[in-house]
Image (cartoon, rainbow, N blue to C red; front, side, top):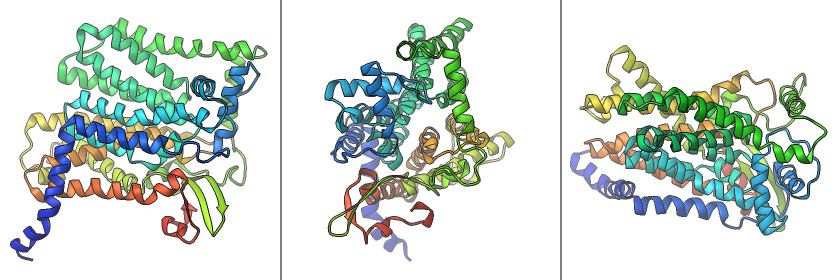
Length: 452
């Protein structure tokens, strides 16, 4: 094909790509676009499914127990149920009441991710892409639309990362932001113990802060803000629970919770749940989780599938491996060929920043994903959610690098990645939000036999 023919074909796509890059560089419009998609998709017809969906069998009921002062046993710390109880107190024990606070948390998560990446890197493109990809993921959307608790882990965990960045950048307000970091970190742990994994990112950020700003926390700030305060917050949030359930002290309660998780499904010859999935399969999106299924008149079905955006998952997995190769190549002191093709002349300072950005997202990803390899209990795709956000950030970083390329073809390819992820989100949207669809159309959405 001649250069003239290529130009004829590429011109419309190049113009669209340039507009997309422009949107990412103008925060008023870019952030508004993220917020619009996030809030609209999370809150639209939130009470449309009036039935109990998946673990809504437990968490809204527990929240109601707290409001009524009734005894209960829960296998997780109580903070998320307290928050769900706020919605129930305002709107009543109805689907909107016990889902609205989770929807709010899920709507804020893309914006928090945007602000974290922006404050970390001063790169609007990377920040916008990271927030956009979080808004475009199906699993994060599904979990945000019901009375479930995993979304709160991510919101508080990402807020802890944001507060840490601000603590390192703003020396005059450092104590305030260190204490805010500790509170958010403690809040994440107070939803589920898996929130502890955000400590990995906090350590990585402290390393980056020293490298870029020559700023670090002193011993008192680390001990008080990042150790004592999260622990104190964690135990204080148990007080209302213990007042309602005085038959167990805090230590006996934790022994029972630990025993529950250690023994869930252990020793069974068959999985205790049809949607259990091994940790290594999550990155490939092999086994999603069906949350709701009901036949409707006229051969229609209503189906809610807790499934990530397939193209976003698969491309993010590729991005993680590319950045891992970049980190290895940087340590071995030979040029990372993929990036030198995208950016033929990488300034040493640019390479140093990319090294730290790639380190942060890959280390955080590994810190949330790899510990599940040690688990013997039945685990599900939604346990991958905290790791997935950092995988999305890795893909966003790669696309933002492509957008900085001097070659129009590379910039357009990066925009194409953004486009197909958005198309995939719309394509699978009916099974994310439970729209009635034809039973004959459902197989079109189920690309893999293991998705059913």
